[in-house]
Amino acid sequence: MNNKKEKYLLSRFFSHNITLLVMAFLIAVSAWFIINLSSNSENRTASVDVPIIVELPEDAQKEELKLFGADGLSATVVVKGNLMATSTVTSTDIQAVATQNASLLSPGYHNLPIVAKQTGIKSNYTIDSVTPSNITVYVDREKQAEFTIDNQITVEHDDEKNNYANAALSQSKVIVTGPETEVNEIKTVAVIDTLTEDVTSKEEKLTFLDEDGNDLYLEYCSCDVDSIEVSVTVLPIKTVSLSVDTSNAPSDNPKIEISPSTIRVAGPQETLDKIKDSKLTIGTLDFTKYKNESVTEKFDITLPSGCKVVSGETSATITTDLTSYQSTTISAKVSNIIDTTKYTTEMVSSNTVDITVCGPEDLINSISASDITATTDYTGLLDDAKAGKTMSLTVPLKISYGSDYAECWIYGTYTVNVNVTKK
Image (cartoon, rainbow, N blue to C red; front, side, top):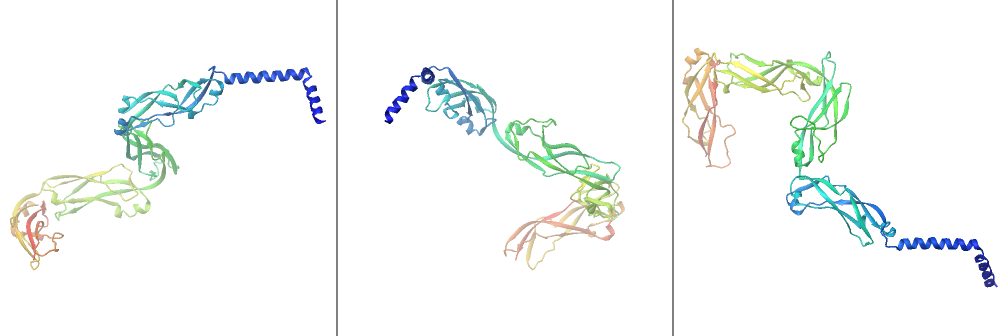
C-alpha cells in the first residue's frame, strides 16, 4: 500500500513543468561547476605571502660575517592555474629564496635577486611572479661596544638664586651592538635637552653622534636601553678657597700661588658644611721634586661626592718662585742602621752619597757633611722567612739635618744597594 502511494506522489512531482525546469537548471549549473573545476585551463591566479630565506655562503660565515636587515622579510608570490589548484596553494607549498653570490664575502650593502620555487606535492599550478624581485641586505661583522653617556642636559634656573640645578642620569654607560662599520662611526652617546629646574625627572632618548658632532642614523644597531631617566635636583652653592699641603718644605714657607684661588662648588648642604674653613686641599707640593727654580705644577680638583664645580674648573695651577735660594752638593756618609743580631750586611754602593741641599745663601755657604745624616730605611724590605737567605736590596735613605738649617730642603731622593743576609 505504501509503495503505491510513493509511486503516485513521485509521478505527480515529475508531472509539473516548473519542477522539471528547476531540476534541469540545477543539473546544468552543477555540470558547469564540475567542468570548470576539472578543466586544465590555467586562467586563475592567486597571491601567496611567503617568508624570504636569506643565507650567507659558508665562506662568509667562516669570516664571521653576519646578515643585517634580513629578518622578517616576505615576498608576494602570484601563482597561476585552475581554480581548484590556486585556491589551495599556501606558503608551505612555496619557498622564496635570496640568491647567494660572491659579493656576500665582503662587508657592505648587497642586492640579491629573489627566486620562488614549488616545494610541496602540489604541481597543478605555476609560479607567475614574485614581488619584490630583489632585496637589499647588509653584511658585516658584528661588534659590541660600551660607551659612557655624555650628559648634555642644560637646566635653566634663576641666576639670582645662589643655587645650581643639576641633571643626573639614571645610568652612566650603555652597550651598542651592530655592524662593525656602524658601531665604529659612533664617537659619542649623549643625552641632549634643555629643562627647567621645576622638572624633577624625565625620560630622555639617547643621541648618537659622529666625531664631528653630527647625528648618526644607525640602521642596524641596537642599544641595551632605548632611553634613560634624567633627575633634576637644585643644589646650594658655596665659594671655596683652594689650598695645597707641602712636604719636605723649608720652614720659611715660600710663597705659593694657586690659580684659580677660589671656585664655586654646588652640592648637598650637609656636604658643603663639612668643607672646613671653606678650604679645599687639592694636593701636596713635595719639595724634594724641586730645585732652586721657578716651579709650575697642575693639580686636578677633586670634590666630595655629590658636588660639582659650578664655575667650570677641573684643575688648578700651582706656582712658586724658588730662584732666590741657592743650592750645593755635599758628600754625606751613609749610616747603615739595622738589627745586627738578626742580619749581616754588605754595602754594594759606596758608603757615601752626594746630596743636593737648597736654601738661603748664608745657610748653603755654611752647611757641611757633618750637619747631614743619611740613614738607611729598611721598612717593609726585610724577609725573615729563611735563615741564611741573602737579599739584594735597594734601600731608601732618610736625610736629615740640624734645626739650624730648617730653612733648607733636600732636593731629590736617595738610595743605596745593600746585600742583607738573615742569620
